[in-house]
Length: 78
Image (cartoon, rainbow, N blue to C red; front, side, top):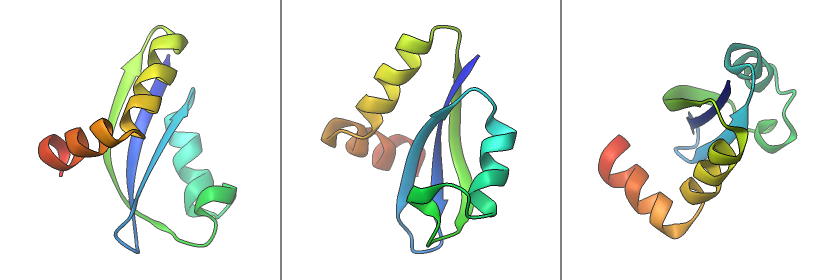
């Protein structure tokens, strides 16, 4: 399984990521082991989706990082 997830950070920004082991990845975020979120702690896991196909997961992650994905996130998830 491949997971796409959205974290809300303490500075009210959002982080979109993709991983095979979601619980392990969240622990890495909390312990500042992920370079992108090392300066700001995650506040909450807002959303995750599981995919059997890694290509579809990476395509969805890319979509969430686009302007259309921002609109989707703000309208449907937050």
